[in-house]
Length: 237
Length: 252
Image (cartoon, each protein chain N blue to C red):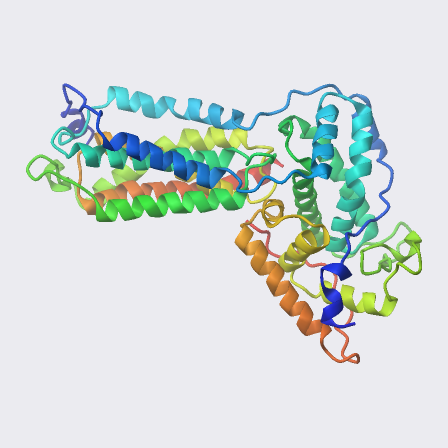
């Protein structure tokens, strides 16, 4: 036997004679009733609807940042679109199966979540905007940079929590494999929504604050999703 | 901090109508399509039949369950046997897999291909079984003796299953090949089994194993390289006896 024999032709699809269904299985089938099946976008709609309540309330009730009107409109729109796109793409990748599939694809979810995080990080690093004299610095609010970052990162995590909780419920039977990857995308989506809200309400516009506080909070949310989803689903199963 | 945030309220929202917004929307839509839509949607008659049968099963048709079982149980069993090399355990996991499919049938998306989904459930059940086995390392039969592993040929078919002698590969060569296969790390073995033996696409194999397509391709390639190394040794240098399947790190 050489390696030449061990190619595709030497490995035909294995066919074993399967045993008859067990008694337990037959009993379960005997009492079977029709079930209502899932739709591809059902979980996405449910998680988005429930998860968006809290961010919408914050945006409605909270004061906007003082420099919003003074900032270049194009930058405001592009930055908001990036945060929004990161949210939509990550959430979709985490919850929506590809056409013809039953389960969301973990590899695609982690790839989309990772690309979204990298894009946000690069944009915040390269294209932060502030208006001297109008945009606030942490010192103006008697805070250190670290304190302001911790505050915003914890805010991002607060916004991400409903997405993680509702997402976990929606995914309870949908992620047999690749739970950490799906959790990463779900956390990134929640974090991106937190960043989207902060884009309109956070008065600090410095690059260091946005990168560490806003994008850092989003990365923390993604890490929390990647760590929590496997642990909680394993405990449940 | 909160007070500082509250002290700034704008009287009006900035106008959002700008020529930039439609461009951003177009780019975002294109990115969504690129990332979410599969590039090639092949029509697989087997998948079509499985989807149709699964649809009837979800509507409560017991005959459809039996058809689905006849359609997929042999290949799931062969896959599990390839991973475990223990026919009795593979049969047990097969039954648990179908029970799980029955319980989870409400999560099925009508019209979708159920085959990769069922492989994924089988794979999850296999990992749970391996974890359980790790806790109970010694497995005894009812009369208190150690279980003997059934002999198997290259295709994963047990010798006692009774197949055409002419169609059966050379037993010595098959033993060497199986021993080599079972010397591979678990993740490489599963990638090779899924893509080369069971004919799953890399996308399906990635979903079943819970990883990326790139990782599946890399694992399958590494498995080939290792197998070539093991099998190109002189006849006297057999890969040796196959080790018991060991639980490796669960793919995340």
